[in-house]
Length: 78
Image (cartoon, rainbow, N blue to C red):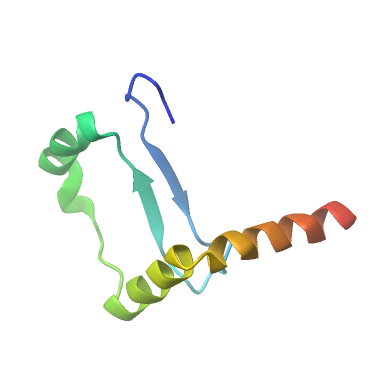
């Protein structure tokens, strides 16, 4: 993470899980969260609840990280 808490990280799950999961995420430093929500929070396009729950489960139980590591190993071999 950024030591000065001025960087916002943005990414998607398109390449890591697949294009059918039309989800993105942002890591916003605590010092910028209120400003972010006040200024651009209305741009959020909510993901269906089921997809959110599935992604949360993948991340929380470690399956997403295992998947990423498996893909990295596979790509190194090629």
